[in-house]
Image (cartoon, rainbow, N blue to C red; front, side):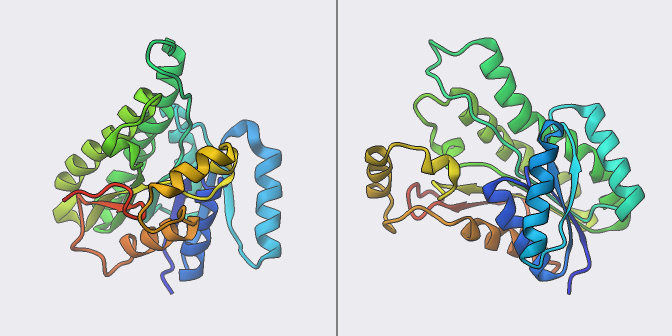
Length: 248
């Protein structure tokens, strides 16, 4: 039993759900952050997980807002105690070629996907360092490593997460806090299910293992990196992409 408190931003999404379950299975107290406008959906999500035997807490938070993340963390600390584990999983897409992309498409994606990593992490890092323990995992993407047509905003934000991860890992390394990133490839979620079948088949054909990943593939990696014994892994990026993109 871990008995740590874990906050998962974007926790009510397809990938976030698998992460929340994996951490709860280990014995963590898990809190899933959701967009304030999605309260009804989030409560239905919580009820569904309760039926499955999971007691996951939920909290509203606009992770693109520094002020609202301050409020959110204060609320968590008042009700559940300090955050030991942070998984920055919140993310959106606004795919267009750069020639068709407007300022809002750029700012929205960078603000949610990269800005949120600063906003939420900034609220918890002091406490982690003071207590001498913390696990931070930033969910990036294979497209933050290799780029992707029509995703200059998304690829830039996800690549930025790696720089943030490596820099903060150095700052916190001697304080018992590890900071790592995970770069999923194409994962079987509702988002990829919406891709036309012909294109989906082309994607799968380019993945050496011959299938899209399952959310549990990512969740397993998160559980490993946030384990108390994983204290010698920091500043790393773990690719979980079925061999779609290989580097060293």
